[in-house]
Length: 100
Image (tube, rainbow, N blue to C red; front, top):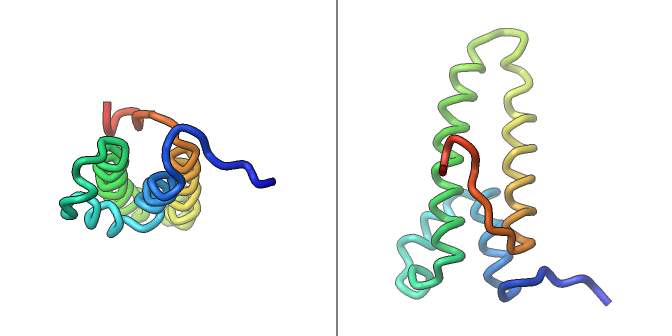
């Protein structure tokens, strides 16, 4: 028996997790009429877009530093995977500084 994430429907959990890994999914959710009414998906879509923009700006600035810049893709990947797992497990959370 596989463990299902609790709290939401499995499709909602999957879509919420995908918004962090594939940012275009968040944009599609915000533009879709049927998905707009789901507060769980809307919240994660907005948070994922804000996180993507913030990480892009931060990683671009830090990427200019020669030694530290090579680690920015690893940090980006780790952060997005962490939040994708949290969203897939139907956790309600805010991203510090970005979505407070």
